[in-house]
Length: 236
Image 1 (cartoon, rainbow, N blue to C red):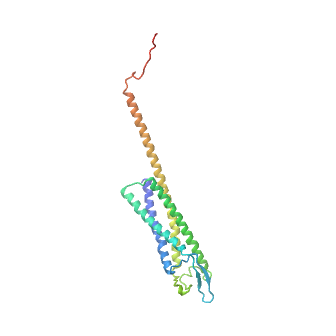
Image 2 (image 1 turned 120 degrees about the horizontal axis):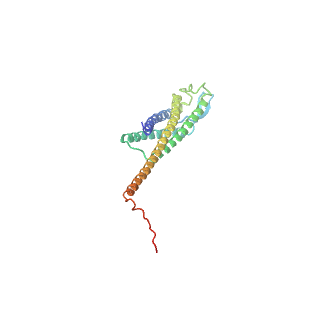
Image 3 (image 1 turned 180 degrees about the vertical axis):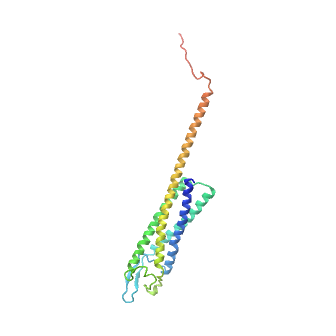
């Protein structure tokens, strides 16, 4: 199997995995935002009240959850479009142009950067929330499902640990997947560039051989001695 075919199949498999991992970000994040009444626990702080034992939450900006959500949507759309595009190229037996492959590399690297920023944001934000939880509970997982906030906030804490853990896994796994897809895209770009150079070299060599054959054919048609002009000396 040619290298280009192996790379295309690897890209299709990688984008299918990326599509699934994007859902690991979007679905738990949507459930979490609904359970917390539109609030985001990332980087949320507060104080434990001694009177009723509840946690007085100081919510951070919702952008800490909105950005991973937007990244998840971007990863989902990008993976879906790439799966369709690669499948179409394989079905039609077409080859991508050098410019298209170059943009694939740039696009994949951009998604890598977006993914790692999202993953770091989720990890640090979840650590900040858990650091508040372990002041009252032995671990952050035990705080899952406990009535820790004022009932007026309509915050359901059940399942937040699994949800955020799944989001965190999806974010880091998406980053690793898009790093691999970036490598595949770069290898396809290099392979395409090498093939173009080979084709150009073969074309130049073929033209050189054709010109040599034409020159030899022209030379063989000239009678012997006709091309040589011998100047005899003249006596004045």
